[in-house]
Image (cartoon, rainbow, N blue to C red; front, top):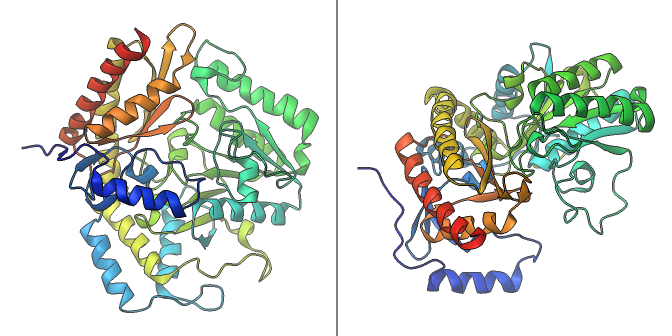
Length: 449
């Protein structure tokens, strides 16, 4: 029998409300909270709150718990390793897990060239390392990023982030030298093309070459092109392959390092170790975090060896490469491979995409369905012809689904990002999709009738 969400008291229940009130008194007000969930337990694709409600997780903590919540092998690794060695700082000394993990990441990331690895504590730190390594190596000033992309919130990575003005407001001046080009968000092409992905992709490439590199940032002064192979916070936007391959061509022509930000799209989420592999492109470096250590703060920049051959002291950190977390990451890689989770991501993702497209044919409020593997975006609109965004629909779908025991996350102005753990079965996916379809029908009738 397929497990289903269990709501014993309408969330948030009394115990959750008590914790939320205490939270609001002491935690930063900058934290955006999707739903009033106070999690106290989890396993696989299920999360239990403090009042005993059980939720099906379609968000994975923003694509973090790829191997599922509390995978037994991850738990076993943590227990074993904390009794062996909790900390030796990675820039003064050496540890076995750090070397083992670096060798493994060199093997599984795209590219047969020689690579090096720098370990960090988060995705934004991985991006910071990529920025600094590229500038140090090339001696160049400019960095090219893309509109609607998210690369982090520290002052360097924030300069690349452009999903909204909220994250950027009142933080000027940011790191100088960053220029933004249009990203081929083909459902809403920033250059106005309605003909489909290839045209939007080619137009965005032309704009990058003719306008950005031709008038703003001389290509021989560009230190890196940093891009998301699939935009995450921007709405799970999948670009045309022609555009990704065009970036590689431009980078090669001008000797510019091409950096793929795989913090959200990596670690098997799309059915490949890195999403960029879907497009037949090998970048010069990839940033990894989120799912790499099953929810522990960890990450890495894996790049062409010459990018990370800089003088000692040029870039270091104290906590990066923690031996316990490096061991956890090795276990995560083992689980993904041995349990064939990338294959499952493709299989269940295809099933979900099919059902979601059926929903789109039945509900005018669903404007677009897109994705790779278990990285799926669903965009809501008020009108299919004008494609007017429907942010209220998104918010109300998330709210009502939560009340029924389904965890959903938003992205972009009016999209959902569906990113369940890669261990999810088709039967479990259908449970969540049934709730989602029911809620969409209700919201469509209530808000747009």
